[in-house]
Amino acid sequence: MARTITFNELRDIKDRLPDGSMHCIADELGVSVETVRNYFGGYNYKNGKSCGFHLEPGPNGGIVVLDDTTILEKALKMLEEKEKPISVADA
Image (cartoon, rainbow, N blue to C red; front, side, top):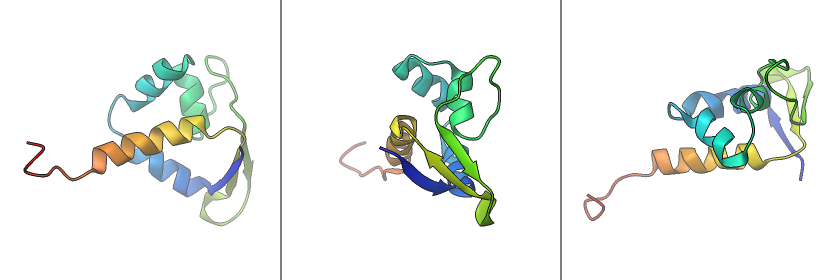
């Protein structure tokens, strides 16, 4: 299912990911790390593939239409886990 997001929002998600997240997502999905980076606005198509990233110029870096949201969903889940408060009962 396609999703529309601003380029700045997409980059913000990428920038908040913990170190090593690109590798984890790539390993989990069986794609190259460069393909995951391309999903977040990179452009290394020699070592990575295109992944349904369509950019239209506009405010906030433009509008991005993502054909497949799998990588975005994995990234958002990682952020949710990273930003979840640790309670005393969890420690």
